[in-house]
Length: 114
Image 1: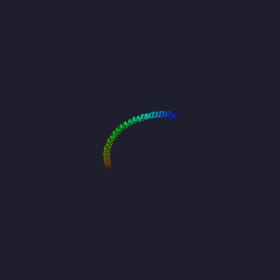
Image 2: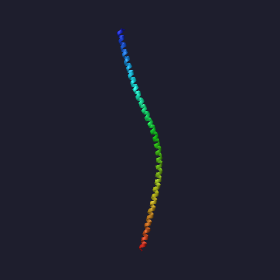
Image 3: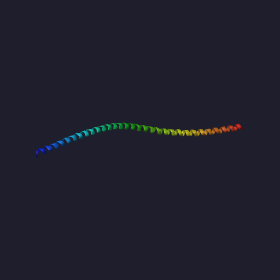
Image 4: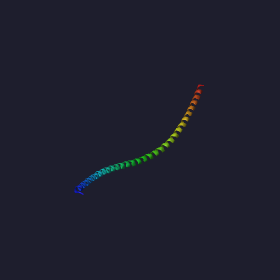
């Protein structure tokens, strides 16, 4: 093989080696950027996860509180129904008494007129 051909091959291999070296550097730089972005995403996801955990515990407290409110509303409803029944009974008694008073007043007026 001639020295010119050997020099040409070596130059070609040297150029390929430089291109491969540049490609490796570019690839490494890209991977470093990707890794940095992934680290940022991971940090953001950790923050989101922490916030979700806090929300989950708050929602659990709200759910427990609502269960207590539901129980209280049920009890208040039962008590209110009892009060309504008492009010209806009292209204009926008042109406009965008013009717009797009117009847007695009518008797008194009739006796006074005679």
